[in-house]
Length: 84
Image 1 (cartoon, rainbow, N blue to C red):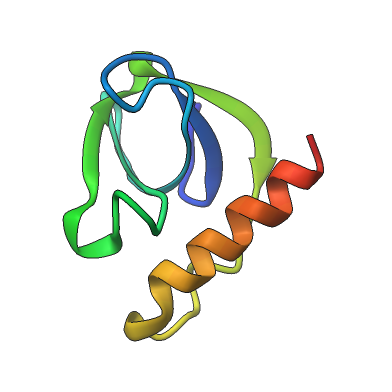
Image 2: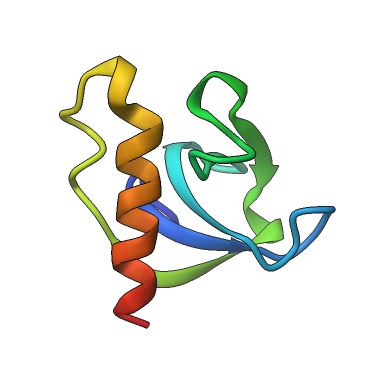
C-alpha cells in the first residue's frame, strides 16, 4: 500500500524511471510530484499499478508552508535517493 510521503518510481508514461513523492493517495490512484517538472500546482494523478514503491518515506512534507512545497519535495527526494 502506498501512503502520503512515500517515495515512488514511475513505471509507465513519459516520466518512466523518475522519482516522485506521493502527496495524496486513495484506493486506486496516487497524486505525485517531484518539485521540478511536476510541481505542486501541476501535480500528476497516476494509477497505483503504474508506480513502484521504493520503501522510503518522509514525514517532512506534511507540515510545510505552501510556498515552500516544491523546494522541500526536491530536497527530500535528493535525501531519500542517497539512502537507496
